[in-house]
Amino acid sequence: MSVLIDPSAWPGPRGLLWSHLVSDVSVEELHAFAEALGVPRRAFDRDHYDVPETVYARAVALGAEEVPARELVARLTAAGLRRRRTRNATGGTGGPA
Image (tube, rainbow, N blue to C red; front, side):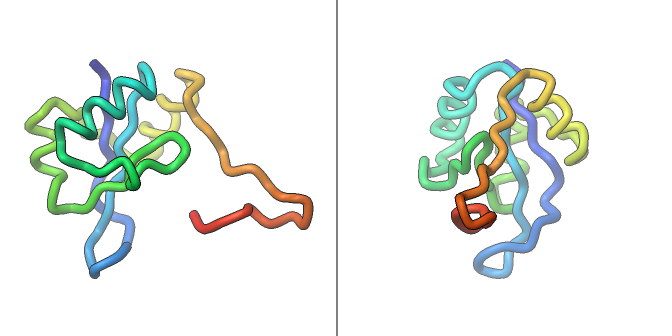
């Protein structure tokens, strides 16, 4: 298993800082880990889960590897699992980040 988590540094809802949770093995592995962590499927966004700082320590305790954000993206990309947002016909991204 190779689930990665970056530091809680991204401002988000409820005044919390958020992390990204990814797998550099498979999306199935990521979904299974998130389910074990108690993170709802609605937190999944293309290739990662957004997780609040309140679950960070539990994710690490369950085996997530703490890595800097740049390494997380590099490993996700190297694994061929990075899914970038596509642009729509008007040049927009088609939705929020």
